[in-house]
Length: 349
Ligand code: AMP
Ligand code: MG
Image 1: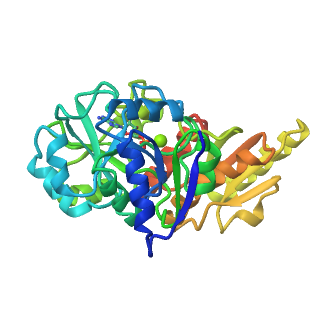
Image 2: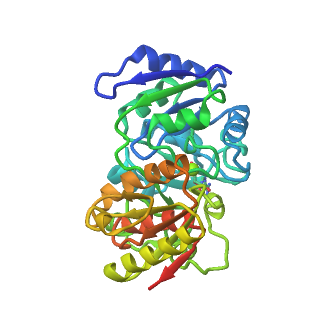
């Protein structure tokens, strides 16, 4: 399949391009598009054949449900059994934005889209290109992240092209991917709202609107033997090609340990990548030393993490050592993704 790649400026959108993209979706095709979190791989959420195509393009297991993207609150009614009052409050506070809400699905949503579940994950993104594109596509766009399953979610069009060229009809190359990590997922089908995936919208932010909110315990406890509640969190996502190990402890000790590991790796003839910060990058001796951002600026770390993991894939790196980050605010989402990328390999010093 020939993939059309079109650059689109979110401050001056070419509506004809978005109309063309919308027609592709309505005809059962696939379009990758920018959102404020990461790039999405979109298909018609109400067409089971489109959902099957999404799974095929990603190489994603079909029991891993897709998020349905909408562009207006009016459109929510048709795809859920009911809109609980708490969901209305959530939408008022955080939509459009990086929050995915799980609700009971209505009949119109095919099981192919929800991975066989009776619930549906819904998000209204805030990226102007995404909103207009969803509108042109008919209002319901099923979209997982636009990466091949197991690779980091794409934060740049070049990574979407790398993973999806020849597998989708169109790639919209846009800027404005400000967050860099996938949306927070909150399950509103139980008695108490539960976070299934941490993201930019934190537990504290949700509690201000909802009262008590819990977090799926598998996110907090790396040794938990129970499966995570979001099917997608069961897989070793976000994995770079090289084995990644996180070193956690006081900063000077962390640097010392990583440098010791690097020396040992060099003796074995391995090339070492290091994920440090602006504050520490000059203290390391690795072959490829990258700063993920300023330690106090979690948003910059979130924005850069996946890009760095992808860059290591393109360099001839055998092992990666990373510093650990605080779990305050967005730090929880950062550590959740980093731990998954590391296959939970963490050393405490
Ligand atoms: P992605 O679209 O790649 O960000 O992945 C979507 C995430 O949402 C995966 O982790 C899915 O397991 C999760 N998800 C989607 N729908 C549901 C649902 N109905 N119940 C629980 N998790 C869901
Ligand atoms: Mg994904």
